Length: 191
Length: 191
DNA sequence: TCTCGAATCTAGCGTTGCTAGCAAGGAGTC
DNA sequence: GACTCCTTGCTAGCAACGCTAGATTCGAGA
Image (cartoon, rainbow over all chains, first blue to last red; front, side, top):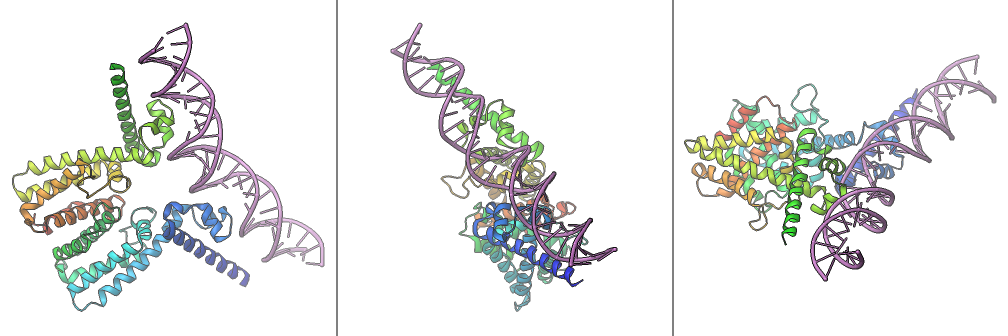
């Protein structure tokens, strides 16, 4: 009985080990450096062990992405709730979002560019961390845009934020005017 | 003398052959299916020939992307100039942009998600087709936002448009409310 | 007709994600 | 306490990838 529990615990630990190794490797050298061989070496197990935990490399990346969603949601919540008024609230949230994308580019990439494994915009299947993140955005916008079309407005604001970050990261936009662009966007949404 | 010219002409033809094959293959089966082996087979030459034309696979994708920028710029110009007034102009342009991203998802991916080879936002190095596309957006916005911060406003509008398209394409946003979100964005920018 | 250089191919390197099939070792049964 | 059996993890290898070195063919110019 207790043996089974120990095994399950060890298994969970090893799964965390894999996800952590993948994240660290990606943050240090980019996703291209995250190969199944290097991951296996890192966790000191053989390659096939990875496949007893995850369906494939994509699933490992999805697990890392999920971690990212949870962290982003926490950051957004903190930013939103610690601001004195609705305008500052939205500004702080956008700032937190931007900072997250800047300081964790590799994580952001896994969350929004790769990893199509995760389901979005479906109340049943969308991971809670993702729904929570969207919820933070929505609640920050509510006082400024009203309840009409709140979801759609949230989606548009999020898309704009996301567009700014991806285009800047891929040097499609100069890093220079970043803060200014963020301010313009906030202005358009009433903050 | 004339022999040299013929050779150069044949070489250009073959380069076009490569780019066309890459684009067709990508549009038919996605970028993952575009391998140097399949490309070589398609153009009925051996693999190394590809490398006498392009530095590598990335450069071939960049060439396809460049084609996409030219087509997108043309479409945007047509949309912008054929509308009766500034508001309709911006709406038509956004509509054209969205339709392009929807009907050429693979091309759009090469232009904005992959292919970091191209230089953006640099007057000297940025390809003309790209500058022209940005120019269309700017001129469509000018009557509505004024000349203050026109470039930055254009960048924000473009980022929002881009964000909407990428998030929708990766099913991060439901396909359902797409038109509605587009309308909301236009409304925020005065159209 | 011969020579030389350019153009093109064959063959192969190192790496990738992933898997089949074998060996070890502990859990449960008599 | 000995014996199955099943789980667990490993070794080895497959097919495919981007890319390149070196051999080979072929045609232009002397």
